[in-house]
Image 1 (cartoon, rainbow, N blue to C red):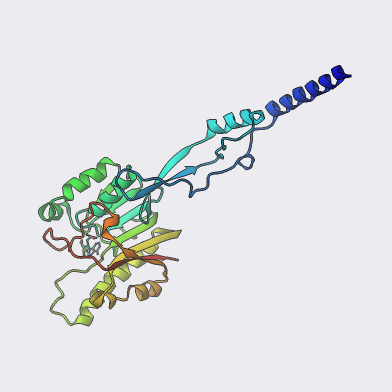
Image 2 (spheres, rainbow, N blue to C red; image 1 turned 60 degrees about the vertical axis):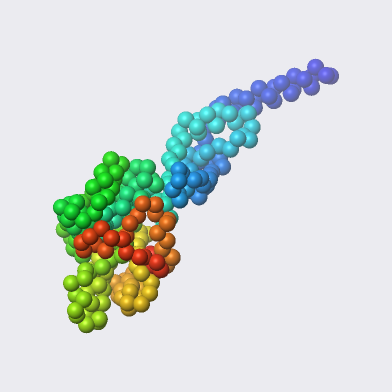
Length: 282
Ligand SMILES: C[S@@+](CC[C@H](N)C(=O)[O-])C[C@H]1O[C@@H](n2cnc3c(N)ncnc32)[C@H](O)[C@@H]1O
């Protein structure tokens, strides 16, 4: 009797083994995923975090029974894990265009946090000669960007870029920090000065709109007091068919190495507190 029972158990075991090894290649549904907002960790001294992103095939958790080992091996062979790094609103898996850069310290701060900057195009209206003459750190920042694979361009007019210099390029994020039309209009009435700044921002929005993906975002950081509030950034957005996705307090310390430049001569930094980052989208 005992012999019969032992034979039956052995037969079931062998059948089960054959079934495991002949099962089709597992699909992603067979396994547990780490979602795209998985583990976060500090990267160096930057305020970044990493997210474990898994393209294609699921990551197997450690408590998978031994009978599923073959499935586990197959999955691990195909698994591709790419580290996505964040700095504040910005992520290394986004294609990012930066316009109206001063000494390129903002772009450089993002690039340092990401490690690689192959996802970035950093631009200035000013030619290289102006940058060399006015900003002590422009050349080293540009060198840093280029060494990390960033495309760096000059003489890029954010009010015309979509139809000429950057025609055909598409981004997840387009960023213009502290847009300003210059100081030559200071003798003009306040309303005229404001209109010049508004025209710059409005034309930038029109251009950027043509260059973002459907779920892309246009970011503008802007001072949030007095004269600057009169520029009515949010209304400019709605006039251009853009909605405010989010307004968040701008904190310079979120971007190590970033120096806010006046932009029209000299290397002085301007005070940017309090300011907000406006995120616009469709
Ligand atoms: C207040 S500065 C800010 C510079 C830089 N974004 C920063 O945060 O340090 C304004 C910048 O806007 C740029 N600018 C003005 N008109 C522009 C335009 N049409 N297209 C691109 N940039 C422009 C100027 O060259 C200047 O560097």
